Amino acid sequence: MLNEDKIRLMCRLASYENGEGRKVLPITGYYRSDYISLEMLKSLLAGTLAFAAVAGVFVFYHFEYIMENLYRTPWTAYIRKGVTVYAIFMGIYLIMTYVLAALRYKNAKKSLKRYYANLKKLWKTYTVEKN
Image (tube, rainbow, N blue to C red; front, side, top):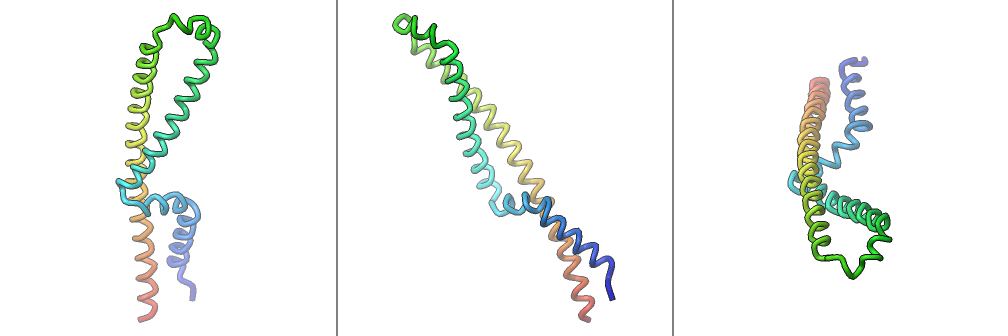
């Protein structure tokens, strides 16, 4: 005889594995610090590339001025200003990445706990049927 509660539970578990579980299970495969470090490393690379692209567009936009004043401009001041802006940008970006990665990891762990609780319920239904 079919047990409707068991079928619902199995459907719920299967939909989790095919939906939210595909995102959650890889996240929970890491320790918290490893996951956050990996996300911050990816953000550091992406933020650096984005900053370089914006700086390149800025330089190309002002290329005529730069070429006209190539020898009269105090480049060290501009370089210091660029490094300062980069440091501020990356600091804010990495703080945001840390917070988001920590929240994502926390939510993934909660979701996985509910999944394991449902698996435990399903296991209990099998052991009850045996006896």
